[in-house]
Image (cartoon, rainbow, N blue to C red):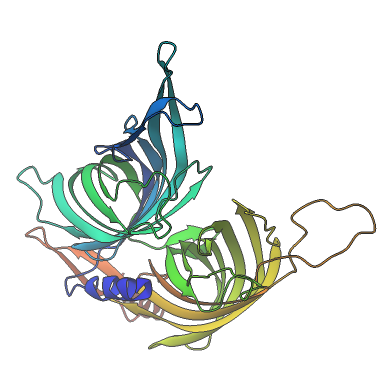
Length: 422
């Protein structure tokens, strides 16, 4: 399901208009316009064991502050893909009152963060025609959102949702500021917690981003390609699948940088967020593959092979301690369509054996639950190509741009032979 959404987004992004790719990166922040939790209350009378009557209220807390970063790849003048990383604490208030028969009532109020969540929206943006000022461009967006949580206290937020939004980007040269209204419908929470979160969320966000040019980027004289990654795991993430741990197919998302070393050979470094899902808990991991990538051909849909070390950091352990390094090999194909670099790859990673989650006395050794040392992933990538411009852009007398092949080297050769004009 999640892979299908990504494929649909890539297909819709192939607009027949001329390409003008840019990469935007920046910050995004705002607040929730709806409460994080619905109102819930329960009352009970005094019982025969001497417990007094009580009234318990679980109330919506203050509005959540949302803050994070964004990366956007402009695929065509009309379509773009944006990936965000957002931190959002879910706040709530508990009011508990007791009514003793022989004295005054006692009321306690507790305001606290029920869960610290990280949200990862992946959006397809449709840029509408600019307004009269030409600097303001409205847009519509839609896509999927993933969510993980830490430091949970009585809440178990669902991990998948659908998101739509609308906004307008004010362009100030390479900088744009874009206020946005978003609506997210989160999936129903599978394991009903004591305090379910509110599934319908409306947010007001403002992003500030800086855009790179459409020309290829360079680092120390080598061409650099940037992009986004998404995909899914094809194997279970835990070593003991028969121990009662109910696994779910995991997703992954992140960013990629590809540095061309020489013709056909590149170095790719990825930053991939990959939560390891079980039925009622998640182990959070960030993978950093460093791959030497060899392209078999230059034209058409060029196949490639890749290999290199992978590094990993983890959090929200839940009794696990994922290893920190492994070796990755893969193969796939890459093509450039209308100025957009698209790739598909199948990767296999062999991780080192996990360490013990707890300290043990000297000489004590026993087996323990751990993550799977074998990982197979299907990965899709989209980004700016590593191409060198081979056509010179000239200005038309009426202000329109046109291009023609660059024959300056031929003219230089003729002049050297005395056959051309000085």
